[in-house]
Length: 304
Image (cartoon, rainbow, N blue to C red; front, side, top):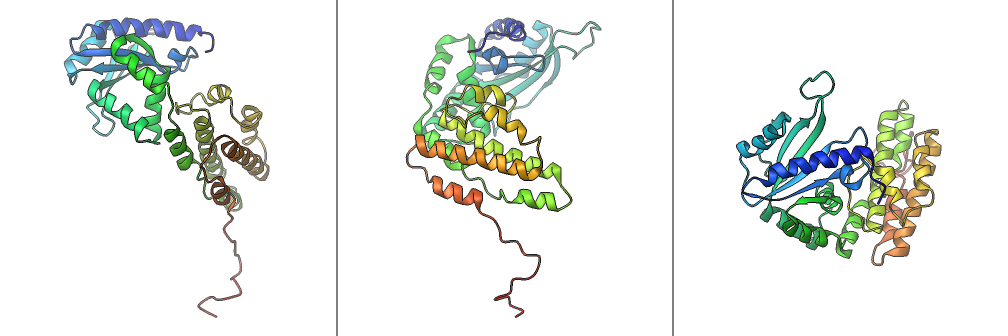
């Protein structure tokens, strides 16, 4: 665990104060702070993320009352999202020297029903789910600091502390399929389309990093702290943190070669550490090159 940054400490202090306000509400069962403040690595870009667990559905009056009592500047209380099973609030705490509204630190609240969140955690762990949003939820619980409701939240933290092998295999099975790598040549030849070239490289890097996270039994926590995340992974290609930025600093052909080498090294680590994964198929898909034809193929066209 890194040393607590000063930016983390005052954000944690604010989070604790807000948790005390939420704890006064009858149906709040627990409050947890997540994200970079919980990990002790917050910087000036960081917001404050709270997970609030309810025994029954919160009302807008209840949600707004906490913000008002804390002196926050409300941006919006979002309606219930049935797909994500969440109510979200966005507001700002504190103000700059001008005392202008919405000039303070951004606060994001995720309100969850206890029963629903418990079922979601069970589903992800027992029937492996590989969507980034669901994995990010578990990462938030894993990293989160309990501010109130120890008896409710502690069992969830203990459950997610064990990253199951079934989830590891599912993540590798999904993100180990890295298709169409050959397209980098197409983007270069079609007018040096650097926007799509680097988007393509970034997509490949994301797939590769999902494999590294699964190798280390770590939940996906987003891309904002990629370097710090890789630093905490023991199983990874050598010097990956120094090699990744080079991909965006050298000519495209050299960048493609550097990236392909990193992917191959990651595949080798999967092969070394995990049984039952068809790494040969992953390599074949990644390195497959579509036949390229400026002139027509000489044989078996219907016009012959």
